[in-house]
Image (cartoon, rainbow, N blue to C red; front, side, top):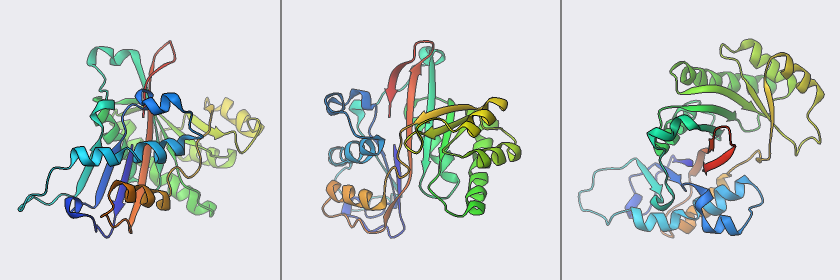
Length: 267
């Protein structure tokens, strides 16, 4: 699931009033191409699969132009063939985990992406929310950004939308600073093993003393670049002026059957 913004809002006739696009490719476990082909990494799934599918969704979803159409600020592209809402009687048997890749440094994207995911799934809460931020070289600015996003996540926790909060790729000093500062403590830290062959000993020792789960992941630091987004949007509509469009966030979520570890859906 992806959110995009355009400060210029210059589009083709169908989208000339939109300044925001939401694309949801649905349950990728049901994609026939995905079943036949193993993608190199999760960014390939986002750009090569989810976004390219928007070309077909675009044709099917956008109605013909009307002479007095009401202005539209957000356009939503969804392939209904791959959408699966969770039934009420099966919710208690499922665990939903979501990971927000915040490309924009606006903390509001956390709430925006989570609420969009819950709406698409037909649920009012999830079990786990993990935050991934882009690389910020200055340590002080990095931690200030983490805190602003974490406060947004704490509000979602307080409101009952999330049960467990986690972070991604924090080294031991930064994780310790966050833990000491945070009101709602992080319970998960995902580590990319591409940057290290084994789990860092310092992080492992510290996490055990604070009951923080150290998990691994293989997601790239840059899930979706502005250049790649504009390239794919150019495929969606040859008339679209893609200049100015930039990714705001990407969310990936999985729905697992409890006690069995079976993936029911993934998006």
